[in-house]
Length: 270
Length: 286
Image (tube, rainbow over all chains, first blue to last red; front, side, top):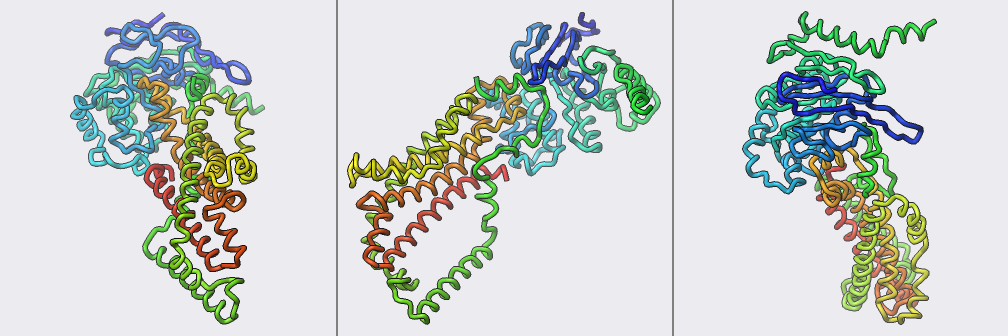
């Protein structure tokens, strides 16, 4: 059953189940997961590795069909990649044979859509992400952080309503990661997009989210949803303060209940 | 359904960053282009200087040891033969080039087409690959006497067929290695924007395969030249290969070596052309 939100639900997930057929057997990645995400909401999906959080995101993107269950975006069931949706991947996923500008225009090329009405928007985004002036650089000439910022511009360039982010900053160092989180918060506050953000980093999830959705380990089930009421804009300093840390501890406790690290350790040593 | 699509549907989402570096090919772009790249004018100067010294030493040694020119002509004699008899060589050079270009274009086009289509269907690829390997490993020159007997000793056709059969499979095998690369992340990216199968090919799979395609085209062109010359040596009345046999049987070693110089220049030109193509279109990889 979808959990009702305060505003209009834009994305709904109902009884999502996904079973992968691997050579050596079946993997239950998701089991009977239901969720509803409001327009303009920032939702982080959090859980340990292999809990099916990426699977859920990929199902929302229309790239992976669910085994059973339905996902709707703006009332329309997802059967293929929806037009109003943009995806940001684990690595920047820039095409190495194209320069930065050509990479940013790639979605327009695939959709056979003129980029002219969006050029001004893209310029603003390039300024915002500090990439202005690097348009003719090839991806290998950019740092990891710049590449990921470029992929954000590529995604935002065509103005999607829903942005799905699949552990986008996992490969970046801690400092760059903080920077990126501040950037994403700013972009979200400026644009009011609906963002679904998958991560295994508790601090990152709480820093960014309106709601943190915690999944249990395989098979991925909904463990608990934490509303995060911390004031915005949030700063990195805040992550060291008491209200924030209390949130982190509460979320960690839920994760460990499903995945008790201490009892595992205790069991390992006689 | 293309390879990319089936793989994507079955794979658990996870990105292997090294996906690009696992393929096995006959050779890598890096090996053929960057390792030997001349980086500065000074490098080039050193290379030319060494060549000059070697040629001068050879000239000196042949003069001092009084080697007869039918054993080994002096570099100056070879140079003179090249200069004075070039009008005699020219029609043969054009004959070889015609055979090389015609055979190569046919072979490379077929090879590229086969590589692009076959890699879409892993089963067909598995069945066909051993036969392609057979074509790569069998010396196609062996067919020349047979084809010449059927199609005529003066005809260009036997040589063109043999060059196509020699270069095509090499182009195919390298290009197939390129097309077999599937970067699921990039395919997912294009599909998330609703890319069609054709767009996946033109925007992702082809550019991803391009470095290996260029390697295949380069190796195929050089192998085509070897085969063209070999074919002319065993079954033709013209061409540079035929001249090699002719001049060596007449012990005109200065002309013989002049032909070898021409062949070396054609081979190097082959290489340089593809080197620059690789630098222009595939430099993103190195």
